[in-house]
Amino acid sequence: MSEETEIKEETKNGSGENASENTTAGKKKKKINKLSPEEINERIDNMEKNNLIQSKYYKHLLQRKNELTR
Image (tube, rainbow, N blue to C red; front, side, top):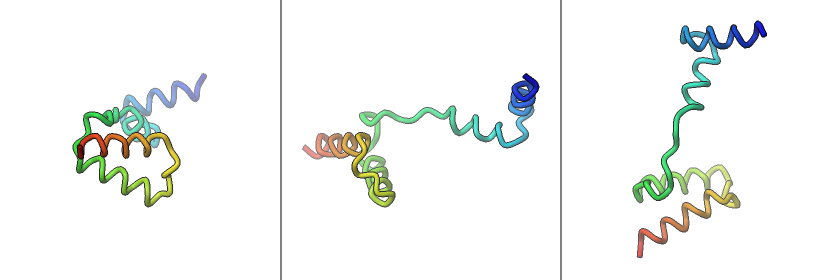
């Protein structure tokens, strides 16, 4: 229990490592259909660099890119 209260206090105070993790983890991502073509290309390139071309997200990005180029 004491660990939980310490974490809560750190996030309230904005100090400590846990506070920075919560701010980045709580950030919402944009849906694929709301992305601009430039953003889609950026994400596709980033995923190719990281060798994540087998993921469903990558395939959905490619599908959306094809829809926008029609």
